[in-house]
Figure (cartoon, rainbow, N blue to C red):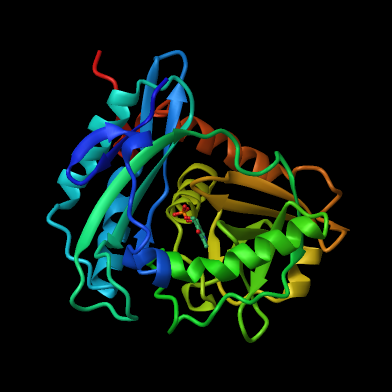
Length: 304
Ligand SMILES: Cc1ncc(COP(=O)(O)O)c(C=O)c1O
């Protein structure tokens, strides 16, 4: 099945979407990305894009930070994405990668006097992490939030996350957990983190240098609406991870991934916890368009 990209204002085969070696964003990290899941529903033969609009809201907010003016509204970006995914005709889980970037072929560290562009492409992409993740606390810290505006996925700022991820894999873990510069739990390299403590959800707060995840928001709402479980957003100490009843990651790529171990210490009794299991089941139905209550979050791509 061929993949397509929307590139230079038109749909082209992905293999033809190329940028030049002098493109500004390659050198200075002056781009913003998003990740959007398309979830395949095999009974309905349908792909549902999950919380499409919210992803483009976050992208356009980030564009303000990097002074990237795009000639598209949120609705137009959504339409382009729907048309792109429709063209690809995938019948499996997919991942959509939009990028807003400084596109001039020009050198010099700056944001001004540069052209801006937008591209988006689609690839088939299954699970991002194993069913249960073994994690290690990273020696790489999540930089302070006057460096990272919490709502912006700026490409250049992901180098710390890349360092942390590779360090974790080299140490035999599946994923890293990054701390803030002052030593509180922040997040995974591409995921937010939740703990279950005394039956409630606890997650690092916006001031703990996290990306305010769309999946994080989804889980907070599902836990409240479907299970009556409250989420407390607060500073989390590293040792609370070791003693939590349950821990899990949330993210567009990773969905809800239970955490089995942190720093070689089993979480709970080492089995996937009851609350994580329940949330996982509810979430899996919601993202595939199987729960009518949450269809507003799901954009069906294929016309019947
Ligand atoms: C650093 C980081 N934290 C958290 C997340 C989770 O955010 P979302 O649920 O919006 O995908 C991501 C992925 O986008 C991320 O890159």
